[in-house]
Length: 167
Image (cartoon, rainbow, N blue to C red; front, top):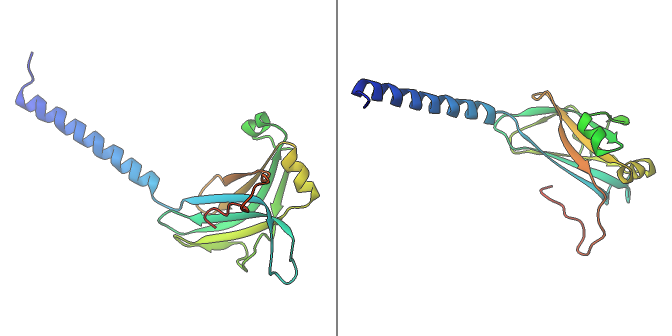
């Protein structure tokens, strides 16, 4: 049985309205602050008057969204296995009180398109955690309920120096 003109217009209106609703949901989810996190281990600090030649875990956070946010906390979590990480059962948790390298202490307002760079001292205890299990850096901000997470991996020895990424 063919559709009448009225039914055809009703179906067309329903399809267009559903498409517009999906577009609005997408736009709502895509707006706001979005953070990109790059974590790199084995970085040497040069040119700092009191911390020269110190080995650090570099933490670079960039706001790639369309609204500012405030970075509130940087933390480390150590998981003994991938199963513990999946279940979010950390064996050790650390808050890093002063991870700043560029005089931007926490809390720090991160404007759109700007980056914040911090460093965590990579001592023998941190080295052991990198070797045994999964060590992750978590960056908390004022907009999101959950932190942005990046895994700390051992840098492979290779020619050409470290990959500095976007930072």
